[in-house]
Each structure stands twice: as structure tokens, then as C-alpha cells.
Amino acid sequence: MPVSTMGFSADRIAELSEDLFELQESFVSKPRKEGAWSRKQILGHLIDSASVNHQRFIEAQVNDSIVFDCYAHREWVELQGYQEQDWEELVTLWSALNMHLCTIVERIPEEILRKQHTAHRFDQMAYRPVPKDQPSTLGYIIEDYFAHLQYHLDQILPE
Image 1 (cartoon, rainbow, N blue to C red):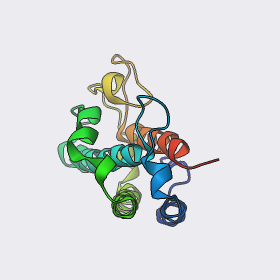
Image 2 (image 1 turned 90 degrees about the horizontal axis):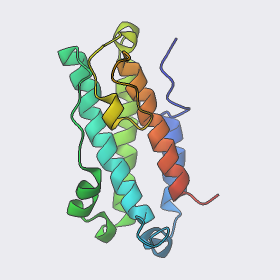
Image 3 (image 1 turned 180 degrees about the horizontal axis):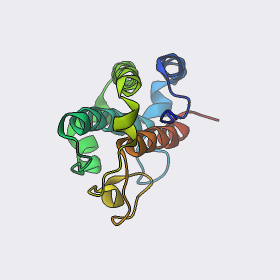
Image 4 (image 1 turned 30 degrees about the horizontal axis):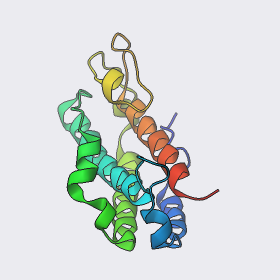
């Protein structure tokens, strides 16, 4: 049974990119509510997430381990100044990274995706946490990545 990418594929990423390109700078630059990230900052967070998970998806195969470090996502967004960056450049980068992740996921052998690991940090770092005492898989964290991606795209794109 293949890993669920929640319908994400290179074609779907291209479609979403077109939708994102249509958003106006004034719309994406405003915080969604007082004290919250703007849509630009959310997309920046998704760029960081794609970058971090790119490394995780490869390292898991090279090292036969799914013990990954957490990262300070709020600080990453602030330090990189996504709020001041050009929206179209951010969309282009987000699109390229996620198309590449789709290609990577397609290439991972099923036995690696489904291999159970007892050591992980998904209780601390996953969008949908896994208790520390339960085994997990690379396939799970890939599915979790796409669930996290969808959650934030729902925040960015108007209904």
C-alpha cells in the first residue's frame, strides 16, 4: 500500500502554485489576525518545512533511522525575513521544493517506507504526534508532512 501524499503530486503542486501566484501582495502581507503570521510568513514556514523534510526523507534512507532533530520554526521564519520577500519568489521556491519532494517520495522503496522503528521523536516534532512508546515509520512522517502542508495551505488560500 503506497504512502498517502493526500493527493499531492507535481501536477497538484503546479495547480496550487497558480492559485498562490494569483494572490495579491496586500492580501498575503497582512497578518491573518493580531499577533499571527501573514500568509507570506506561513508560506515561508512551508518552505522551511519542505527543506527540513527533504533532508529527513533522504537521511532516513541513508542511515536507516527516523530519529530527526526538531527545528525552531518560529525563529527560522523571523530570521529569514519572509515578510519582506517577494511573494512570487516565495511561491516559486515553495513549488520547486515540493515538486522535488514528490519525486523523492515516489522513489522510496515500499519496504523502507513501512519499516517499523522504535526510536523516533514524533511525539515532539510531528504535526500529528506519535507516542514515544509506539513504533513508527518513514511513511508515517511523510504522510504527516503532507497533512501539515494541507493545513497551512488552507490558511493561505481563500475559500
